[in-house]
Image 1 (cartoon, rainbow over the protein chains, first blue to last red):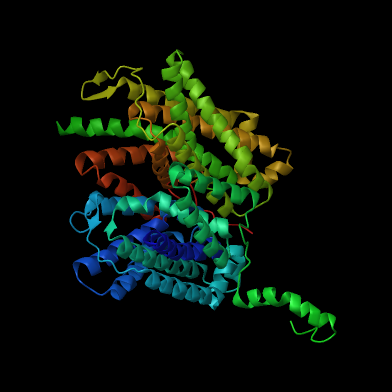
Image 2 (image 1 turned 120 degrees about the horizontal axis):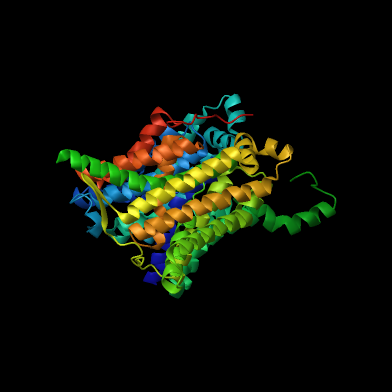
Length: 297
Length: 294
């Protein structure tokens, strides 16, 4: 039971990171292979504040989000004005640089040997609560004016600019929000595992997040969520083949992009309204066949 | 004494810089044609390094033919990658984002396939060239470094000749301005892109063999390409002379920082340089940053 609970908490942690990457890659069209770094920054910020300075868990969570968002400015500011490749390369370099800094952080981060003694705060109900709040907030962001401008930039940066969208500022905002989500995920991770090591947040973690979003569908939040639940639990069943796990992720990235670039759900979203309509569809058809309420839906 | 130390670091820097140049030139070449950052470039390098290692250790082939065979393997790997992964994306006219994602997927796939099949072990090349140094008074170099730098420049000169003096090279130049227009003018685009990937793969494979001999062969060797990417941006993304200049300068700066400051700062410096270049002059030393055109 504790094992299944653990897996579910890890799913929640990954979900926060995936929601962030989904906004950045799926909705804004910027590709990052450094999101594990924001998770790491969130995890260590929270671990230091709560574990060393004795602050409450909520402060740790918020500080993790804020610090990760702040760090994203370092690579966002010089690159959001340029074409996507520069951002992708800078993000890759940022991931490596963060790991190096944490590795050499001395007594503050515990270096490569790790950071021990983070208080345990992340329980399953708390993790699920945070993820639900995060998902609702993300849905509102995507449906807001900002979210629509992100999508406009993804579809055509020049046209978006011509429509009066400040593309640099919008891209920066999207990056900061997505980093904050990853930061919260990191903080949850730290307070679940109670032990941190820089190597936990290497490029493989970033790959996992990116592959999940691509697999779930670029531009579908619910698709990413479903993909995250599937892709986090499947490797648990196939533990003996753990060496092939990353091979699978790499292959998933390439084959999805080559064969089905829209991913699992494309830009389709599963909504409460849609589900209700889907479930009641057989009944409605009978009603409309009877002649009434044809225009209701 | 200090002069000798400075000169020695200069030579060390140029030696590693010439290997970066091999990577950066191929990477820049692909960027100039397809306008995307090929993150799978490191995989070509690793394929070359492992192919060289197994050919030299398992078969009794003399060293030079073995190297040629290894770099040809890397070139074929690059062509296959293009054929299987990039061409479908290219033909669908998909956004650059898809190329970037696919290339990163290939990089991860290759690295971990090697870990899962050949194993994560570090492997040392057999001592083909004695590690004896060439003493030049103030500085000394290993024979291998001399040969690596020599071969690197030989290949780059041949490439320069190929691009400026042959018909296919002329087509590559045209395609770097506008691939679609070049296609309309009767250039066989698929063959051209294939050629570019073959060249890029061969250069990456050669650098892989040298890096394998200089250090060791291991699945994560491909991550060194991040430095070559930075060097290419530093020199001007898409510009071949820029890629060479950027690589040599980066190699020298790295050597000085590792020798006179700290070797841990070295990789951090590469990242800071990237950010600084993007802030000050995103076009790099020799390129010019071009906004997307309608």
